[in-house]
Image 1 (cartoon, rainbow, N blue to C red):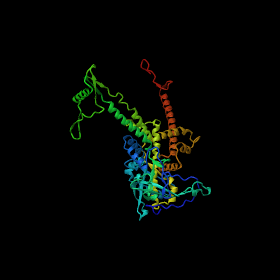
Image 2: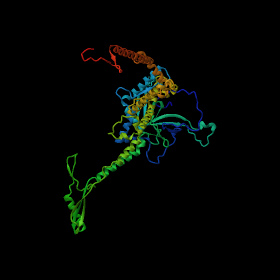
Image 3: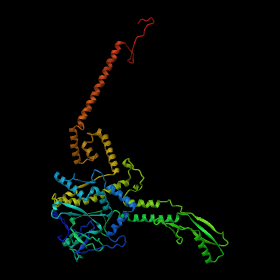
Length: 553
């Protein structure tokens, strides 16, 4: 490894050793196997689909220029990388990491430095789009050799057509009989692992020619799609190669058909009488040259050119007619009748979108956005959301590798510490999917309605802990955090203590009952007072005695 360019991070030996196996550990990064410094093997493409990985990358990049394919790629990238003025596209999530607050603070600071080195706030869209199209993303992690504890000083992009990972194996000549006692030794374990860089490009059969670079000096992230037969990393555009070629072919054929069938053409029947064949042909050419108008305007030079000697398929037909016929006649051929049918074009456009895992509904630009219930959201949108989530998970491996190198170089952690911590370091992307927001809001509303319906049975059949765990789905960490926040809100006076609220409600009910009894007693007293002043009818109303005829009471 001393002959390799770059640097290597020293790794401590793992405490637990693994037992021998009868199969080699498979590499998921499509590294080229090499035996004894030479080329180990190759794959022959009998189908003729592509020559090598460079040919695939060139094809992917040409596909991305096509309007429909570019639009689908734009939908995927915009969904994965949500940009905002104030928010960062991605943040590190350390809630599940069991380390001190100081270590977490340092990890967050170094992650911000990694984003700064990538210029991720400005270049996030371009970086993710480049990775999605090529299927690979390489960065050279540049450090100051005199001061390695300063960490990474620059992240320089490397064209995937010029770099390749190589794994050297021990060259075992006698492999016909494997002895179980020496099984591990006979399986030719790898002896070295490095990258090969060639500025002229990696051509087929020359994967090992170039500069050898240490693996820790390169940050590599791939799509996760691998052709097991040919040991090639593929892009997510690979599934759409056939669909895009079919769409291009059907569009070209449609243009040719419309150009040839759209215009109306005329047939001139020229009466040539009893002239001989040669004389008749000469007479027909004279008539054609006399009535044909083939003046063409050149927009580049401003000149008018006569192209009578050229005849295209869009011109009229001139046919001779012998004596005894109907004489000179002109008829018209109708143009194509089904020129407005675009069903086949729409079919292949939909097929292209499905091949790229993009919902076909996004193909219609004039379609309105549905703000409704989550049950109205199409299944394709939900599948698309899961697909974007898998892309984010795979793309985060680049952050993992860069952050690992940065933390180890600056002495924050050791390589063995990283092996224990890496599974608990997650990356939270800024989300801009309105369908997900609608689904979450509706689910929360349904949960609240269910809790309200369960409230009479609380304390009899259900406990508060059961509701928080099984209905609301709160974890132990979330419950502890919410309890602390609710206590702070109660102490600060932002909300009223639920126990105090219950006591206040009971007091209000008692006051309402006392007021009702008081009103009842006051009404009885009023009726008694009115009865003392006059006569009271059966309904409770008082009546004044009628006057006599002479005016005496």
